[in-house]
Amino acid sequence: MSGQVKYMLDETQIPKFWYNIVADLPVAPHPVLHPGTKQPVGPSDLEPLFPMELILQEVATERQIEIPEPVRDIFRMWRPSPLVRARRLEQDLDTPAKIYFKYEGVSPAGSHKPNTAVPQAWYNMQAGIKKLTTETGAGQWGSSLAFAGSLFGLDVTVFQVRVSYDQKPYRRALMETYGARCIPSPSSETDSGRAVLAEHPHSPGSLGIAISEAVEVAAKNPDVKYALGSVLNHVMLHQTIIGQEAIQQFELAGDDPDVVIACAGGGSNFAGLSFPFLGLQLRGGRKRRVIAVEPAACPTLTRGKFAYDFGDTSHLTPLVKMHTLGSTFIPPGFHAGGLRYHGMGPLVSHLYDLGLIEARAYHQIPCFEAGVQFARAEGIVPAPESTHAVRCAIDEALRCKAEGKAETIVFNLSGHGHFDMGAYISYFSGKLVDQDYDEGELAMALAGLPSVAAQ
Ligand SMILES: *Cc1c(COP(=O)(O)O)cnc(C)c1O
Image (cartoon, rainbow, N blue to C red; front, side, top):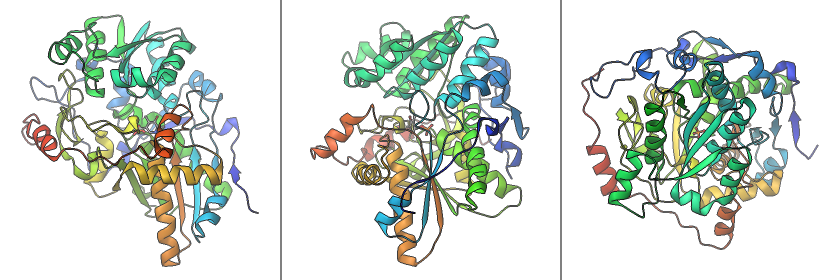
Protein backbone atom coordinates (compact mmCIF):
# COMPACT_ATOMS: atom_id res chain seq x y z
CA MET A 1 0.00 0.00 0.00
CA SER A 2 1.44 3.35 -0.92
CA GLY A 3 -1.16 5.95 0.03
CA GLN A 4 -2.60 7.41 3.20
CA VAL A 5 -4.44 5.13 5.60
CA LYS A 6 -7.22 6.74 7.66
CA TYR A 7 -8.45 5.40 10.99
CA MET A 8 -12.04 6.58 11.37
CA LEU A 9 -14.40 6.30 14.33
CA ASP A 10 -18.17 6.65 14.11
CA GLU A 11 -20.24 9.34 15.85
CA THR A 12 -21.06 7.11 18.82
CA GLN A 13 -17.34 7.00 19.62
CA ILE A 14 -17.05 10.74 20.30
CA PRO A 15 -15.89 10.77 23.94
CA LYS A 16 -18.64 11.24 26.54
CA PHE A 17 -16.28 12.77 29.11
CA TRP A 18 -13.44 15.26 29.09
CA TYR A 19 -10.25 14.04 30.78
CA ASN A 20 -8.88 16.17 33.64
CA ILE A 21 -5.14 15.49 34.07
CA VAL A 22 -5.14 17.28 37.46
CA ALA A 23 -6.60 14.09 38.99
CA ASP A 24 -3.48 12.11 38.02
CA LEU A 25 -0.69 14.63 38.66
CA PRO A 26 2.00 13.65 41.19
CA VAL A 27 2.16 17.28 42.42
CA ALA A 28 -0.87 19.59 42.55
CA PRO A 29 -0.72 22.62 40.24
CA HIS A 30 -0.06 26.08 41.71
CA PRO A 31 -3.11 28.17 42.67
CA VAL A 32 -4.29 31.21 40.71
CA LEU A 33 -3.67 34.39 42.76
CA HIS A 34 -5.60 37.61 43.17
CA PRO A 35 -3.43 40.42 41.72
CA GLY A 36 -4.15 42.74 44.68
CA THR A 37 -4.02 40.45 47.72
CA LYS A 38 -1.74 37.81 46.11
CA GLN A 39 -3.91 35.20 47.83
CA PRO A 40 -5.50 32.27 45.96
CA VAL A 41 -8.66 33.40 44.14
CA GLY A 42 -12.02 31.84 44.93
CA PRO A 43 -14.70 31.03 42.34
CA SER A 44 -16.52 34.32 43.07
CA ASP A 45 -13.44 36.36 42.05
CA LEU A 46 -13.77 34.97 38.54
CA GLU A 47 -17.55 35.40 38.28
CA PRO A 48 -17.48 38.76 36.48
CA LEU A 49 -15.63 37.05 33.61
CA PHE A 50 -16.89 33.47 33.32
CA PRO A 51 -20.08 31.47 33.98
CA MET A 52 -19.90 29.29 37.12
CA GLU A 53 -19.81 25.95 35.25
CA LEU A 54 -16.57 26.98 33.51
CA ILE A 55 -15.09 28.34 36.76
CA LEU A 56 -15.81 24.99 38.42
CA GLN A 57 -14.10 23.20 35.53
CA GLU A 58 -11.13 25.56 35.92
CA VAL A 59 -10.55 24.34 39.50
CA ALA A 60 -11.91 20.77 39.10
CA THR A 61 -9.94 17.83 40.48
CA GLU A 62 -12.13 14.90 39.37
CA ARG A 63 -10.72 12.80 36.53
CA GLN A 64 -13.74 12.84 34.24
CA ILE A 65 -16.20 15.62 33.47
CA GLU A 66 -19.28 14.78 31.44
CA ILE A 67 -19.66 16.46 28.04
CA PRO A 68 -23.22 17.85 27.76
CA GLU A 69 -25.21 15.95 25.14
CA PRO A 70 -26.12 19.12 23.12
CA VAL A 71 -22.38 19.86 22.85
CA ARG A 72 -21.61 16.30 21.68
CA ASP A 73 -24.43 16.67 19.20
CA ILE A 74 -22.72 19.73 17.65
CA PHE A 75 -19.35 17.96 17.69
CA ARG A 76 -20.92 15.46 15.25
CA MET A 77 -20.65 18.19 12.59
CA TRP A 78 -16.92 17.40 12.31
CA ARG A 79 -15.97 14.83 14.93
CA PRO A 80 -14.52 12.26 15.36
CA SER A 81 -11.62 13.76 13.43
CA PRO A 82 -9.45 11.36 11.41
CA LEU A 83 -6.17 9.81 12.52
CA VAL A 84 -4.09 9.37 9.37
CA ARG A 85 -0.99 7.28 8.69
CA ALA A 86 1.26 9.50 6.55
CA ARG A 87 2.72 6.70 4.44
CA ARG A 88 3.69 8.93 1.52
CA LEU A 89 5.64 11.21 3.87
CA GLU A 90 7.32 8.15 5.41
CA GLN A 91 8.38 7.01 1.91
CA ASP A 92 9.56 10.50 1.04
CA LEU A 93 11.80 10.50 4.12
CA ASP A 94 12.81 6.86 3.59
CA THR A 95 12.41 6.32 7.32
CA PRO A 96 11.65 3.10 9.21
CA ALA A 97 9.49 5.23 11.55
CA LYS A 98 5.70 5.21 11.27
CA ILE A 99 4.21 8.71 11.18
CA TYR A 100 0.57 9.43 12.08
CA PHE A 101 -1.25 12.72 12.36
CA LYS A 102 -4.53 13.65 14.04
CA TYR A 103 -6.23 16.13 11.73
CA GLU A 104 -8.16 18.93 13.46
CA GLY A 105 -8.49 21.07 10.31
CA VAL A 106 -11.81 19.32 9.51
CA SER A 107 -13.74 21.66 11.85
CA PRO A 108 -15.86 24.53 10.42
CA ALA A 109 -13.25 27.11 11.47
CA GLY A 110 -10.37 24.95 10.22
CA SER A 111 -8.61 24.23 13.53
CA HIS A 112 -8.99 22.56 16.95
CA LYS A 113 -10.38 25.77 18.51
CA PRO A 114 -14.13 25.01 18.02
CA ASN A 115 -13.60 22.03 20.42
CA THR A 116 -13.61 24.59 23.26
CA ALA A 117 -15.51 27.47 21.62
CA VAL A 118 -18.67 25.35 21.39
CA PRO A 119 -18.80 24.23 25.06
CA GLN A 120 -17.79 27.72 26.25
CA ALA A 121 -20.62 29.32 24.26
CA TRP A 122 -23.04 26.61 25.41
CA TYR A 123 -22.28 27.07 29.16
CA ASN A 124 -22.67 30.85 28.74
CA MET A 125 -26.00 30.40 26.98
CA GLN A 126 -27.15 28.04 29.78
CA ALA A 127 -26.23 30.74 32.34
CA GLY A 128 -28.46 33.24 30.52
CA ILE A 129 -25.60 35.26 29.03
CA LYS A 130 -26.33 37.00 25.72
CA LYS A 131 -22.97 38.59 24.85
CA LEU A 132 -19.37 37.39 24.74
CA THR A 133 -16.14 39.31 24.22
CA THR A 134 -12.79 37.92 23.25
CA GLU A 135 -9.53 38.73 21.55
CA THR A 136 -7.94 37.21 18.51
CA GLY A 137 -4.55 37.45 16.83
CA ALA A 138 -4.60 36.04 13.33
CA GLY A 139 -8.31 35.28 13.72
CA GLN A 140 -8.52 31.53 14.35
CA TRP A 141 -9.96 31.89 17.84
CA GLY A 142 -12.20 34.81 16.88
CA SER A 143 -13.70 32.86 14.00
CA SER A 144 -14.18 29.76 16.20
CA LEU A 145 -16.04 31.73 18.88
CA ALA A 146 -18.03 33.57 16.19
CA PHE A 147 -19.09 30.17 14.80
CA ALA A 148 -20.00 28.88 18.29
CA GLY A 149 -21.89 32.09 19.11
CA SER A 150 -23.94 31.75 15.93
CA LEU A 151 -25.09 28.27 17.04
CA PHE A 152 -26.55 29.56 20.31
CA GLY A 153 -27.70 33.06 19.38
CA LEU A 154 -24.94 34.87 21.31
CA ASP A 155 -23.58 38.28 20.30
CA VAL A 156 -19.81 37.98 19.90
CA THR A 157 -17.44 40.96 19.90
CA VAL A 158 -13.86 40.25 18.91
CA PHE A 159 -10.93 42.58 19.57
CA GLN A 160 -8.52 41.70 16.80
CA VAL A 161 -4.84 42.68 16.99
CA ARG A 162 -4.56 45.74 14.71
CA VAL A 163 -1.80 44.41 12.46
CA SER A 164 -3.76 41.21 11.73
CA TYR A 165 -7.01 43.16 11.24
CA ASP A 166 -5.28 45.15 8.49
CA GLN A 167 -3.27 42.30 6.96
CA LYS A 168 -5.75 39.39 7.17
CA PRO A 169 -9.13 40.57 5.88
CA TYR A 170 -10.35 37.02 5.12
CA ARG A 171 -10.43 35.88 8.75
CA ARG A 172 -12.26 39.08 9.64
CA ALA A 173 -14.75 38.38 6.84
CA LEU A 174 -15.22 34.86 8.24
CA MET A 175 -15.97 36.26 11.73
CA GLU A 176 -18.47 38.68 10.20
CA THR A 177 -20.02 35.89 8.14
CA TYR A 178 -20.78 34.06 11.41
CA GLY A 179 -22.29 37.31 12.72
CA ALA A 180 -19.55 38.61 15.05
CA ARG A 181 -18.42 42.23 15.38
CA CYS A 182 -14.70 42.70 14.88
CA ILE A 183 -12.84 45.73 16.35
CA PRO A 184 -9.18 46.49 15.67
CA SER A 185 -7.18 46.62 18.93
CA PRO A 186 -5.98 48.91 20.49
CA SER A 187 -9.34 50.63 20.11
CA SER A 188 -10.91 53.76 21.56
CA GLU A 189 -13.77 51.64 23.04
CA THR A 190 -11.94 50.78 26.29
CA ASP A 191 -9.75 52.52 28.88
CA SER A 192 -6.98 49.99 28.16
CA GLY A 193 -7.13 50.67 24.43
CA ARG A 194 -7.28 54.46 24.85
CA ALA A 195 -4.25 54.38 27.20
CA VAL A 196 -2.18 52.51 24.60
CA LEU A 197 -3.34 54.79 21.77
CA ALA A 198 -2.49 57.92 23.79
CA GLU A 199 1.13 56.75 23.97
CA HIS A 200 1.37 54.93 20.63
CA PRO A 201 -1.28 56.24 18.19
CA HIS A 202 -0.09 53.79 15.52
CA SER A 203 0.37 50.77 17.81
CA PRO A 204 0.19 47.49 15.83
CA GLY A 205 -1.41 45.94 18.92
CA SER A 206 -0.63 42.65 20.62
CA LEU A 207 -2.57 39.73 22.07
CA GLY A 208 -1.85 41.04 25.59
CA ILE A 209 -3.46 44.40 24.76
CA ALA A 210 -6.46 42.82 23.02
CA ILE A 211 -7.04 40.55 26.06
CA SER A 212 -7.05 43.66 28.30
CA GLU A 213 -9.73 45.27 26.13
CA ALA A 214 -11.96 42.18 26.02
CA VAL A 215 -11.58 41.52 29.78
CA GLU A 216 -12.35 45.16 30.57
CA VAL A 217 -15.62 45.09 28.61
CA ALA A 218 -16.73 41.90 30.40
CA ALA A 219 -15.67 43.17 33.85
CA LYS A 220 -17.64 46.41 33.41
CA ASN A 221 -20.82 44.94 31.94
CA PRO A 222 -22.80 42.39 33.96
CA ASP A 223 -24.50 41.01 30.84
CA VAL A 224 -21.19 40.35 29.04
CA LYS A 225 -18.76 37.49 29.71
CA TYR A 226 -15.28 36.85 28.42
CA ALA A 227 -13.98 33.75 26.60
CA LEU A 228 -10.35 32.68 26.17
CA GLY A 229 -9.23 30.26 23.46
CA SER A 230 -6.19 28.73 25.15
CA VAL A 231 -4.00 28.82 28.31
CA LEU A 232 -6.73 28.18 30.94
CA ASN A 233 -7.34 24.76 32.52
CA HIS A 234 -10.90 24.45 31.21
CA VAL A 235 -9.66 25.03 27.66
CA MET A 236 -7.05 22.24 28.02
CA LEU A 237 -9.83 20.04 29.43
CA HIS A 238 -12.14 20.61 26.45
CA GLN A 239 -9.39 19.75 23.98
CA THR A 240 -8.79 16.30 25.51
CA ILE A 241 -11.35 14.79 23.14
CA ILE A 242 -8.51 14.89 20.58
CA GLY A 243 -6.22 12.52 22.48
CA GLN A 244 -9.05 10.30 23.69
CA GLU A 245 -10.15 9.74 20.10
CA ALA A 246 -6.53 9.15 19.09
CA ILE A 247 -6.14 6.42 21.74
CA GLN A 248 -9.19 4.60 20.29
CA GLN A 249 -7.85 5.07 16.76
CA PHE A 250 -4.43 3.63 17.67
CA GLU A 251 -6.28 0.56 18.96
CA LEU A 252 -7.90 0.22 15.53
CA ALA A 253 -4.49 0.61 13.93
CA GLY A 254 -2.96 -1.98 16.29
CA ASP A 255 -0.22 0.50 17.04
CA ASP A 256 0.88 2.76 19.90
CA PRO A 257 2.91 5.98 19.66
CA ASP A 258 6.42 6.25 21.14
CA VAL A 259 6.59 9.99 20.45
CA VAL A 260 3.67 12.46 20.77
CA ILE A 261 4.17 15.92 19.23
CA ALA A 262 2.20 19.17 18.98
CA CYS A 263 2.92 22.85 18.52
CA ALA A 264 2.34 25.06 21.56
CA GLY A 265 1.19 28.66 21.70
CA GLY A 266 -0.91 28.72 24.88
CA GLY A 267 -0.71 24.92 24.88
CA SER A 268 -4.28 23.80 24.17
CA ASN A 269 -3.86 21.63 21.06
CA PHE A 270 -0.74 20.17 22.68
CA ALA A 271 -2.69 19.37 25.85
CA GLY A 272 -5.58 18.04 23.78
CA LEU A 273 -3.51 15.37 22.07
CA SER A 274 -0.99 14.61 24.81
CA PHE A 275 -2.84 14.74 28.16
CA PRO A 276 -4.87 11.54 27.62
CA PHE A 277 -1.63 9.68 26.69
CA LEU A 278 0.16 11.21 29.71
CA GLY A 279 -2.79 10.13 31.85
CA LEU A 280 -2.24 6.49 30.81
CA GLN A 281 1.39 6.86 31.84
CA LEU A 282 0.62 8.60 35.16
CA ARG A 283 -1.78 5.77 36.04
CA GLY A 284 1.00 3.19 35.58
CA GLY A 285 1.19 2.79 31.79
CA ARG A 286 4.29 2.95 29.67
CA LYS A 287 6.34 6.09 29.21
CA ARG A 288 6.26 7.93 25.90
CA ARG A 289 8.20 10.97 24.79
CA VAL A 290 5.92 14.01 24.58
CA ILE A 291 7.27 17.10 22.80
CA ALA A 292 5.86 20.65 22.75
CA VAL A 293 7.15 22.70 19.80
CA GLU A 294 7.31 26.47 19.99
CA PRO A 295 8.64 29.26 17.74
CA ALA A 296 12.25 30.35 18.36
CA ALA A 297 11.02 33.98 18.19
CA CYS A 298 8.64 33.44 21.16
CA PRO A 299 10.26 30.61 23.15
CA THR A 300 8.07 30.54 26.25
CA LEU A 301 8.95 27.05 27.56
CA THR A 302 12.58 26.88 26.45
CA ARG A 303 13.62 30.44 27.44
CA GLY A 304 10.88 31.80 29.72
CA LYS A 305 10.75 31.77 33.52
CA PHE A 306 8.34 29.60 35.52
CA ALA A 307 6.83 32.40 37.59
CA TYR A 308 3.59 34.14 38.52
CA ASP A 309 2.60 36.62 35.83
CA PHE A 310 -0.36 38.47 34.36
CA GLY A 311 -2.13 37.12 31.30
CA ASP A 312 -2.50 40.57 29.73
CA THR A 313 -0.62 43.82 29.16
CA SER A 314 -2.79 46.14 31.32
CA HIS A 315 -2.65 43.72 34.30
CA LEU A 316 -6.39 43.16 34.66
CA THR A 317 -6.21 39.35 34.87
CA PRO A 318 -5.41 37.22 37.95
CA LEU A 319 -1.82 35.99 38.42
CA VAL A 320 -1.07 32.51 37.15
CA LYS A 321 2.14 30.52 37.55
CA MET A 322 3.34 29.72 34.06
CA HIS A 323 6.35 29.74 31.79
CA THR A 324 6.43 33.37 30.69
CA LEU A 325 8.53 35.84 28.76
CA GLY A 326 6.95 38.70 30.77
CA SER A 327 3.54 40.28 30.08
CA THR A 328 5.15 43.31 28.41
CA PHE A 329 7.20 41.17 25.99
CA ILE A 330 6.17 41.75 22.37
CA PRO A 331 7.64 39.05 20.13
CA PRO A 332 8.92 40.01 16.69
CA GLY A 333 6.44 39.52 13.84
CA PHE A 334 6.37 36.02 12.37
CA HIS A 335 3.70 34.09 10.57
CA ALA A 336 2.46 31.69 13.22
CA GLY A 337 0.20 34.30 14.84
CA GLY A 338 -1.38 31.67 17.10
CA LEU A 339 2.00 31.04 18.74
CA ARG A 340 2.79 34.69 19.58
CA TYR A 341 1.72 34.74 23.24
CA HIS A 342 4.04 35.68 26.12
CA GLY A 343 2.86 32.88 28.42
CA MET A 344 2.20 29.12 28.32
CA GLY A 345 -0.81 27.40 29.88
CA PRO A 346 -0.21 26.72 33.62
CA LEU A 347 -0.86 22.97 33.29
CA VAL A 348 1.57 22.58 30.37
CA SER A 349 4.13 24.72 32.26
CA HIS A 350 3.68 22.56 35.38
CA LEU A 351 4.22 19.32 33.41
CA TYR A 352 7.38 20.77 31.89
CA ASP A 353 8.60 21.80 35.34
CA LEU A 354 7.96 18.23 36.57
CA GLY A 355 10.03 16.83 33.68
CA LEU A 356 7.05 14.94 32.21
CA ILE A 357 7.30 16.63 28.79
CA GLU A 358 10.04 17.97 26.49
CA ALA A 359 10.10 21.28 24.63
CA ARG A 360 11.82 22.37 21.44
CA ALA A 361 11.98 25.72 19.57
CA TYR A 362 12.20 26.12 15.77
CA HIS A 363 12.67 29.07 13.43
CA GLN A 364 9.90 29.64 10.89
CA ILE A 365 11.80 28.93 7.63
CA PRO A 366 12.57 25.27 8.46
CA CYS A 367 8.93 24.98 9.58
CA PHE A 368 7.59 26.23 6.24
CA GLU A 369 10.02 23.84 4.46
CA ALA A 370 8.45 21.01 6.44
CA GLY A 371 4.94 22.35 5.74
CA VAL A 372 5.55 22.34 1.98
CA GLN A 373 7.09 18.86 2.06
CA PHE A 374 4.07 17.63 4.01
CA ALA A 375 1.58 19.28 1.62
CA ARG A 376 3.28 17.67 -1.40
CA ALA A 377 3.26 14.23 0.24
CA GLU A 378 -0.11 14.21 2.03
CA GLY A 379 -2.15 16.88 0.24
CA ILE A 380 -3.01 19.04 3.27
CA VAL A 381 -1.53 22.53 3.60
CA PRO A 382 -0.76 22.97 7.33
CA ALA A 383 -1.46 26.20 9.23
CA PRO A 384 1.81 28.05 9.97
CA GLU A 385 1.40 27.08 13.64
CA SER A 386 1.00 23.41 12.74
CA THR A 387 4.14 23.42 10.57
CA HIS A 388 6.11 23.51 13.85
CA ALA A 389 4.69 20.09 14.75
CA VAL A 390 5.32 18.82 11.21
CA ARG A 391 8.98 19.94 11.40
CA CYS A 392 9.46 18.13 14.69
CA ALA A 393 7.77 14.95 13.43
CA ILE A 394 10.00 14.95 10.33
CA ASP A 395 13.12 15.51 12.47
CA GLU A 396 12.13 12.65 14.77
CA ALA A 397 11.52 10.40 11.74
CA LEU A 398 14.98 11.32 10.37
CA ARG A 399 16.51 10.55 13.78
CA CYS A 400 14.82 7.11 13.62
CA LYS A 401 16.35 6.62 10.17
CA ALA A 402 19.85 7.54 11.44
CA GLU A 403 19.45 5.22 14.44
CA GLY A 404 17.71 2.44 12.45
CA LYS A 405 14.68 2.51 14.76
CA ALA A 406 11.08 1.80 13.71
CA GLU A 407 9.41 4.07 16.26
CA THR A 408 5.81 5.27 16.00
CA ILE A 409 5.34 9.03 15.89
CA VAL A 410 2.06 10.96 16.14
CA PHE A 411 1.59 14.69 15.78
CA ASN A 412 -1.38 17.01 15.99
CA LEU A 413 -2.13 18.74 12.71
CA SER A 414 -3.95 21.51 14.57
CA GLY A 415 -5.33 23.28 11.50
CA HIS A 416 -5.15 23.91 7.76
CA GLY A 417 -3.46 26.93 6.25
CA HIS A 418 -6.07 28.04 3.71
CA PHE A 419 -6.40 31.46 5.34
CA ASP A 420 -2.63 31.81 5.66
CA MET A 421 -1.55 31.48 2.05
CA GLY A 422 -0.02 34.97 2.33
CA ALA A 423 2.59 33.42 4.61
CA TYR A 424 3.29 30.71 2.02
CA ILE A 425 3.57 33.42 -0.67
CA SER A 426 6.22 35.18 1.46
CA TYR A 427 8.03 31.88 1.94
CA PHE A 428 8.08 31.07 -1.80
CA SER A 429 9.26 34.56 -2.72
CA GLY A 430 12.18 34.24 -0.29
CA LYS A 431 10.88 37.12 1.82
CA LEU A 432 10.64 35.21 5.09
CA VAL A 433 13.38 35.89 7.61
CA ASP A 434 14.21 34.05 10.81
CA GLN A 435 14.10 36.82 13.35
CA ASP A 436 15.31 36.40 16.88
CA TYR A 437 13.69 38.22 19.75
CA ASP A 438 15.61 41.09 21.33
CA GLU A 439 17.58 39.76 24.36
CA GLY A 440 17.50 43.19 26.01
CA GLU A 441 13.72 43.43 25.68
CA LEU A 442 13.29 39.93 27.07
CA ALA A 443 15.50 40.75 30.07
CA MET A 444 13.47 43.89 30.70
CA ALA A 445 10.12 42.10 30.43
CA LEU A 446 11.33 39.37 32.82
CA ALA A 447 12.66 41.97 35.29
CA GLY A 448 9.15 43.44 35.39
CA LEU A 449 7.49 40.20 36.62
CA PRO A 450 5.24 40.79 39.64
CA SER A 451 6.82 39.80 42.96
CA VAL A 452 4.97 36.99 44.71
CA ALA A 453 6.01 35.16 47.88
CA ALA A 454 6.77 31.46 47.29
CA GLN A 455 3.56 29.44 46.86
C1 LIG B 1 -4.45 28.95 17.87
C2 LIG B 1 -3.74 27.87 17.16
C3 LIG B 1 -2.60 27.24 17.71
C4 LIG B 1 -1.99 27.64 19.00
O1 LIG B 1 -2.79 27.56 20.15
P1 LIG B 1 -2.63 26.42 21.24
O2 LIG B 1 -3.55 26.84 22.33
O3 LIG B 1 -1.20 26.38 21.67
O4 LIG B 1 -3.05 25.16 20.60
C5 LIG B 1 -2.03 26.20 17.00
N1 LIG B 1 -2.48 25.82 15.80
C6 LIG B 1 -3.56 26.42 15.23
C7 LIG B 1 -4.01 25.95 13.89
C8 LIG B 1 -4.22 27.46 15.89
O5 LIG B 1 -5.29 28.03 15.34
